[in-house]
Image (cartoon, rainbow, N blue to C red):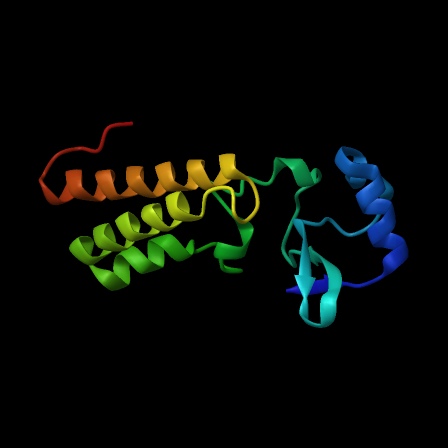
Length: 134
């Protein structure tokens, strides 16, 4: 992960908002706090995203994807087995419902909870020998 701490670049990015991709600076995925109260711009090393607003933090958050393209959730499913994976998804859905609106966007938390509940339902359908619903 690359953290850009150049205050001039960060100021331009924050002022530009949706038009940040036109500034000719590294593509960023989000603003994050780092120890000591500094703020950095997280630049995904393999990102080819031209518009930061196009990042899907619910369905495909870039920080959960390896450089080879493997999604963390898929690795978890393979490592845990179906029943433990369903329990993980249910617990994670509860976590996002619990924290809704307390960290970041309430809407995003609710969408993540639904995403994990749907992922658990799909895994349960497969376990029961049915095809998951689209």
